[in-house]
Image (cartoon, rainbow, N blue to C red; front, side):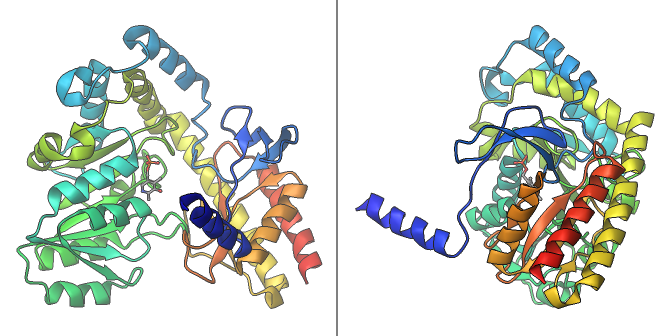
Length: 406
Ligand SMILES: *Cc1c(COP(=O)(O)O)cnc(C)c1O
């Protein structure tokens, strides 16, 4: 029964162009990888525009060395949760360095690390938002924030993406004692950014807190890569910031930075912090090197290269869209390494992705429910590890395919 039922649903998804397939990488995370498709064919060389390794650190020699020495110092696993015996000196050092990084934006900032960003977001929303709270969520928030809101006991109100007038109306009619505004800083499928100064002004006016998911800002934005708050130059006790360490930071994990009392509350009560094994200390040890790289002159240069790539790709996409207007393609209002090419139809997004694949280019088609119906797209992500020639090659391939589509 169960098997028949699931199989039927899988067939329906496939018929709607929603079936997903994994590929297997045979080499390290980098723009050029050997990748095997699900069909059993041998691995092929692909040029990818799909990882979140924005600075190209995931395979950086200094990080490989740091993680190796971390394993020699601390072994393979942590053995227990942080509150039992899994909290190591490496975790402690990572938390205090991150707290220093966040102190300019969040007075007295303290930091708690988590195994993943998904768990950090579940922790935040379930531990902070009780029956006395209302969560105000941008409709395009990441799935982990949506799930955290669902699991919390709070009332959940969603406002249309980026519509701060709608948010203001919702805040002005709210009667619960606690109000939490919840938003991605950089939206993961569109690459656009939340208006943080305006959000902070609303939070102050309506005495609300701001939960910010900086998964795609941390390491990438701000002069030293400290993220969206550093870029915006804002400072407030109202900020509760989640950053991930598996994207630009190139390793794995996440952290929450906030007022010390909030951090203590999370440490004591957040179920995804209390009831889970601490991540391997070697990862925290490697992340110390990662943070050093991000803030270093090399980090500055990597971010500058990334900005050049973004400008090159955007100007190329503009030309492409203008030249093939009848295809109805569009791009996002994004200054970040996430650059969607929105094609609309699921089947067209898939055939575009497979035509690129035939040319050795790996860019996944993103379809509902990850994005709204009718907004299927290629989600192009750029890395400092790409070269200008890589981007040129992608643009040339898109032109050639667009001609065939026309
Ligand atoms: C990737 C991502 C997460 C989850 O982080 P992980 O460490 O991968 O679990 C949370 N929020 C956003 C916006 C993300 O893009």
